[in-house]
Length: 345
Image (tube, rainbow, N blue to C red; front, side):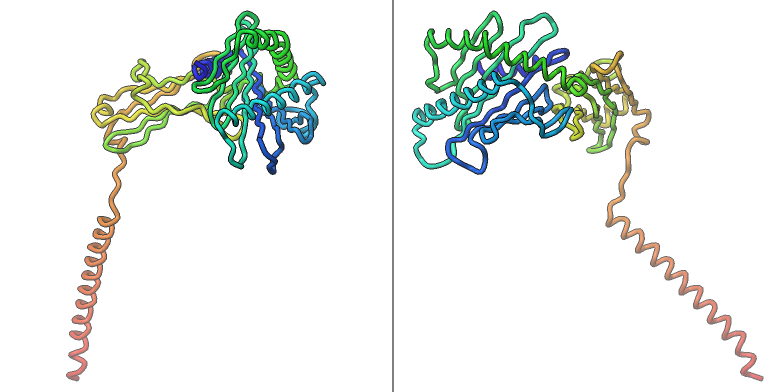
């Protein structure tokens, strides 16, 4: 149940929607790291960091002065501190339930996501807890519905009164606060999260294994959501016939995605037309690039192995040496013929 909800949340953060992610960690014993730390992400951009040592939300990305304080208001700070206390208590419960009495560092983690939607659907918030490397429970809430689901094998099932309390808390405090913070950050960081960067589209063909590897590659696009399709003679190639990668960061704030199809020599000889097509928020129309194997022979690259090259070189060298010796012998006979009359005189 909780896993499917998380997948839904990740997939629903699509075109036109924006989300605020809070990733928090609480550790059980003193370490070189703060007892409690938290990262704030606006969509896929890190915008803030908080820890219990500084008790301040610091700006770590986006516009403005990096390292300056990110003003979320006193009420937001109170909620963050309440989160730290609840995670501390949750970890104590987990350690008792799992009989974790041996010395060591134990961690309680929480992920909170809220999303504002531009398609008329209500805003929602989700909170998910995990401890000792396992999922604990999940809360999913919007203005009309509340859902609580406990993790498998965990004793965090709540009674009706506790669930009613959490529904009131999430509906009237956490959801409005999270979406308000999200909208403020959208306004201050709109030059980043609302930007549209067109993808660079390439169709790569590489011989190998008696056939070819055809790759549809889109790079340097933002936002990360893209519809990338490989077509054969105008018809989409089934996903299960290809190796489909994940959307990956380029390292420059942009993204890339590739899909690869392996075809044999027989299919290449049919001279299909392959097209890489992309639809993206930055594009008014579909972007595509095509390739056709006009001649399989011209497409193939013949590689001569190193032993063959060495053998051919040795033969050529031997022939050259024989020619040189033959020429040297011929010149020697000629000189002796010319000199012999001189000896007689």
